[in-house]
Length: 457
Image (cartoon, rainbow, N blue to C red; front, side):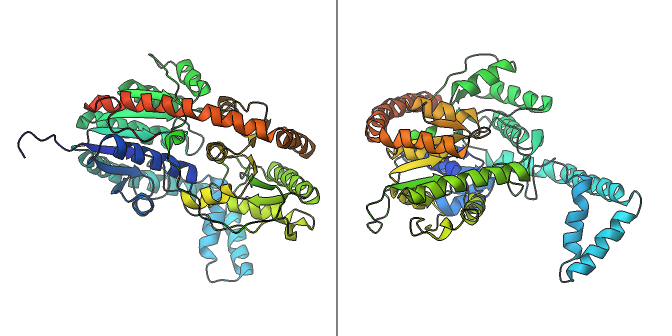
């Protein structure tokens, strides 16, 4: 129709699709705010697992990495792990004894492991060199007509998983493709660190130089990017999830009179998930949480374990239950409900009166639901998050805490629960208002007037 405004096309970039409900909450909140502020906009997702994103969020979606294992140029496993992988493949359908004999024979041949590893590396890089250019060209075409690409928060500026060819290279190539296609890019309330590789710093410096807007979710991240030589301003805004209208929790059966304590553990140094595994440290962590859960049981509290990374956290929950010296079958240990979606997570947290959480968004969503939270922090980002909500006294360092300290700090939080809930409620509105101002700035990049279509308070 003549004179009508052209429809906006907005992309949302996320490392979502890995069953981390914190990342899914971030993606959901950006989608929600785009729909509120730019009615009729065409929304396109760019994530690790497009099929999962389409199913969860109902938007068309494309991959941010070339299909296949790992980052585009990330090398295969080290020589020490090649035998295990090959042995696993060879033992399919064979007896354990036969597989062990094959592994032993394989290791007995001098230089064979190194030769196989070198061959695997060569094949990996050859495939990447041949297929990555095609993926980049297809991705460039998918960005055609996209007015604005929003990077949906999270700990985007890190190389802890996958090294420089993981998060750093992925973000760099999409920022460069956006610049070439004329798409504006806004990086919203991201976290930073760890950043260990000089190549990662190179990628991130150029990303932050090319984007049209950037902000960080805490002062720690802001200072880190300034320290590696990124020029210009480094504004700090709250985590995007604070602007999310949470789904209403499903009704749950009325429980006993006992105080329900929600516990959200993390696979700390667990080799099934953590990038630098340490079995002894993981078991020590599991044992401390098990002792705490036993104390809750004996002191008359009900215990409710809940994951936010629904693939990895459930394994740690099972290990904690097993380590509970007979309390694992106590009626005070509430049965878990299946958690697959954000609605499931909100429904589980709604059952708790108090929360002890390790995961960043396990803490944040609990705060949004006005639950007193004791954080067990594996990164300073969690300490900053609790301080932002006025709860800086209720956090322990995961590297150093003891079961006794966890019990003592929990008792202090429980005794002060009413005042804590009031303080949390007072902090929420200013955080949401700050995010409203950020969205005003970001959507102004594509000509959307400030405050247009803002969500209900």
